Image (cartoon, rainbow, N blue to C red):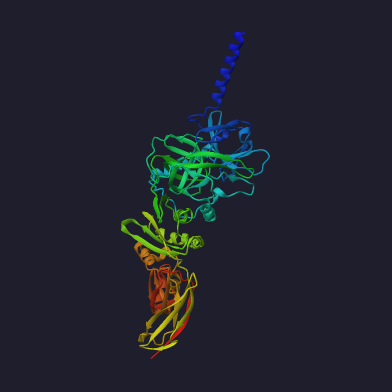
Length: 587
């Protein structure tokens, strides 16, 4: 009897050891070439279901779809036979989970094959394609590339579904420090950049520091993040580590945003839970602290290195109640969006904003070598701010970029100041004392206005009439600053061909009229000759034709209005609308 018990116990111990061996994650697993894969092979996929520790689930190789992702880019198709994943299928956030077959590294989970399937399948990026990304990174490092985020348009490859239903398991972009309704406001413009977000998620460490993390241990199968913003406001895509070789990390098994060479924080991450869905299951995660730098964002994987985080742009938003501090990656499309997010949270996302009557916003953008751009705006409360978010993002895109050199702002500061009363003012009427005047006369322009509570008042401005206005076609214009800039031939954006240097670009922005209040101006039709950002009024036609014929990228002509006289009123008010009246001057 004792012998049978001993034998039974030995068998149980042997079984446990065998099970432990089967479920021990391979360390430094050798490569399994795609050519050696056979249909029916059993494999294990390692990923995090909860917390930070990876667990395996079993799959069976169904076959190889040749050239599925492009010439020479095949996909391993596997059936998910493990009961653990039958109710959820391939999960967004599992992207990059390593596939081991017979103890060898075969590939990384990367694609959802179809939706509402009755049998669960998933696509895997072959290991050779992932290692190709590491070779690209090594080549870039040998050639001394700077790894700055490129200025070209973002790819939407990571969110594209093919006609066959093949969909990349998008990294789960989630916010931290952002109220859900604020996240919802920015969901559509972010989606246009290829950034599909979920409002569920958070951040563990809010520090904006890019501290050194050489001793941080990261294992294949664990969750990892690629962040666009860190600090009080966090935006990061969470996926899974495919392979770790010393400090070199491959993850995701498909692109993050398809940016090529990049420079963004690599972060730790923990998985809170998985939300199963027949449409698209998703991991809910918390973004951790910075553990290194992501340097490649390619078709087959992202590549990063453990250690120092990358240089970023610090952003501070100061309100009457608190300050928010965060940092954003350096990219001409992403940076304005992230700064708008942080500013929106400060204005709209707290219980004690105290900005219901309206507020002023001062934006200070600091560049290298002491260059600074300071811009001001008024808002008539939170609704006015929400309605103007698209315009604010467009303005920030203009203010934060350096179209001449590959450089980004050193720092961005927003200062929000509450107003005592709503600044909205309607322009009821404009009266001109004389429609025809003589040299030496004074013409009075009287504005009748109404505040947000319908209290009416008037304000007058006297315009002296000089002799050189005689014979000109004149009009009185009452408008806000941006409108008057456009009437006078200004531009909302400036092509690089029109800019001599960065200082000239900043000078053009500084010369723009303020958007608040109202301008009263005397204008006359003219022809502007533009030499880059410098304008000349009524240049002789022969000279203009010679110049534009020589270099059309640098020289141009356009019809506009020459502003002969102007006055700025009501700097603490928002005055919409434009009124134009003719004026005739005689001797």
